[in-house]
Image 1 (cartoon, rainbow, N blue to C red):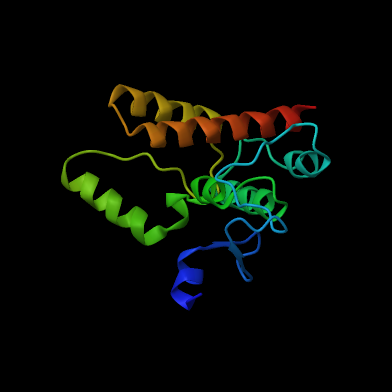
Image 2: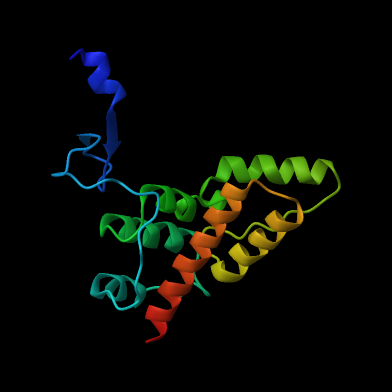
Length: 160
């Protein structure tokens, strides 16, 4: 077997960004990394995190922190973590460019500050509605629906 065969057959996955494991496809001893993880509001790990966060009233900074906690606990996939933790308001340079571009067009943009509470369930539902109205890629719609499901599960655990 050539090294290129092994490398072409390898999948990199991680629950910790500072470490990684290489898994050869078909190895029954190492579980597959999935695009999504089934989340249950009965999970004690989820409840321990959810009790700290109200996703209907949470800042972008807190959302990124919560996402990291969920990912580190193995409750969400890397893809889900990336979708939840990307918060434009945490990137001040990007926010300034967007604001300047919008202002140049005579428009305003309403991006909450990094510590301004937001109803993320409502925001993701608005995003889903817009995606459906504009005929977005079905994969984008599926991802958005998954994020809404995760947020609703977290909120349900938070309210218990």
